[in-house]
Image 1 (cartoon, helix red, strand yellow):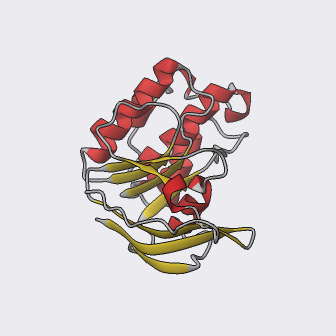
Image 2: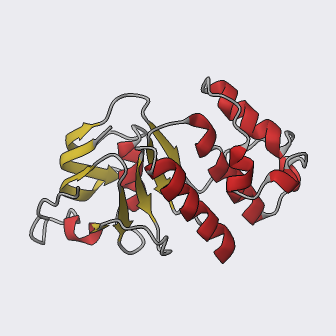
Length: 205
């Protein structure tokens, strides 16, 4: 599974944000999105996920191959931690592999109602569901929000040793170092501004 983006232009609220953006992310690789607030990181991820249409360009990504994770944790408050994970695995027709409980240090919390979790625990559960659905392409918008340093390290280890090592790929908007050997793409270079020179293509393997 390879993600190819060619000549992409995207808009937010009807206003162009990014223009002439091209890159490639291959299996087992990650791409880190950089840029100040408002640079278009979230907008780009939403377009890649199919949640918003591009203005121009091409995205080569098979349907239903990607999972988008935003600031919302996507958990059901009345279900236990384990029931939440089983819900997602059943929904996507995946085996109920409880190894993800250990990957995100959730086993001690597995019987607790999700509505009683702290912000950091909820975030860990929200990220753990990515391990249950089996999508090869992860589009992650600030995934480490509310996580302490230990939990950031745990998530980075899962991403590297589980997802990427299995041939998955990831595009990640983050301000937090994850310790990945991954190229960074500064979106400010591709800002859609009629008063400045248009961005140039960039490719990452």
